[in-house]
Image 1: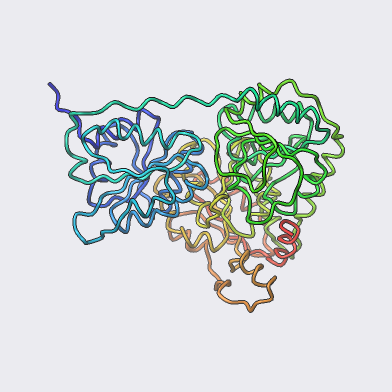
Image 2: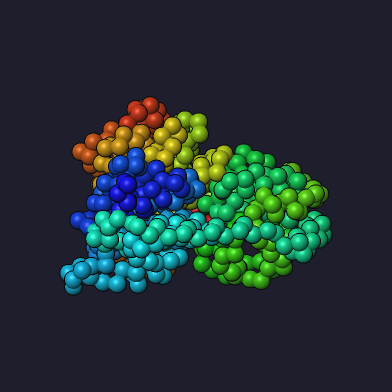
Length: 529
């Protein structure tokens, strides 16, 4: 009789069965060693990152674009605590993540209640033990992969990881997929039939599976304007005649929504809106794949179920009274509001140049900061997950780890990371991860020497400039020291040939572009009011 597998081997076997191809993390001296050993035997890649935060970002992004569980492993105590920002990302961006930490600690050294730390940002917390080991890991995976997706925190000691599992337990049955309620569908059809000028707002649930095709089908049947959240950009191509622009809950999209007599939310999660009062009294039809947080205002009707099934249940619908020219005018006005002035290179000119130079199908990852407004307005996306950004959490330090995760998961798809100087300084060491792994990413640094979004808010409140400006940093020199190919582009230097060289290099490349940040204030005012 063969020896029974260890708990670590059972965990890795279950993960492989759910399509997991790699683990991300930094090992401690405990259970992570057993997990890495088991992963190596199974053929699952182990990616050693430079920070636990970046490891969690990479695992969560992998989960988003692959629709399989992302896995991050950390040591006990400081290793676990360092991953909290990435786990919070998975929580607020609805990514199915498993965070496996060593522990609990066996003494007061490095000891704190890890499950309590992660409880507010995870869907479940548990300690994995040999008894019923397979059932426990399968339950955790099921919890993470039940919509709305989210992270699960698991503790595993070195002792338990190496104990043979003789009682695997029975995996829990998968929950049935919700079916759209017939009465709710009838009410939704009546709302659409009575509407002359609906507007569609698509959110993060619209990105997966057959939901993008369902969105396109509904948008073309209604012939109405479509706004997309940051997470949903590309789900309906920017080139589609119905696409008007971005929705954030701010002022830029107000003209479009104010002209509507019905707001149709499609896979929209309220976490995607910026803080602020809801601006509209227009009735809301809420189409969701799963019940998540409540909207800031009451909805007139809600239909919950697989979005393709929901759209099928709504058909047929009639084209509305929106003229094509009117939708185009709304798009032009919205885009013009986000034009940014400046001398030499500006975030807008940098993004436009990168969009023109990028190979076909290039994905872009975008860090939080003032440069993101231009990035979203002037980068054309044509596919779901064509743009990756932290939206619900809106954390800096995301774009570089996300680009690495993209390159590892889809190595044939080009990817460019657009980041500010502040965001890059939070994860600069991950350039060596890209070098080690041979990720042919292009990192584009919009270098304005400041936390510009906070700097603008400080100025708008007529406060003294304090703790928002950085001394000059030569990121190209730093990147070369870390093994990347790198260029520094001054405000009067040509950018296009440098971009061409970077995309053609086949190696991790960084372009440090000094930009004029003078137009940020006007752009922010146009976007958010």
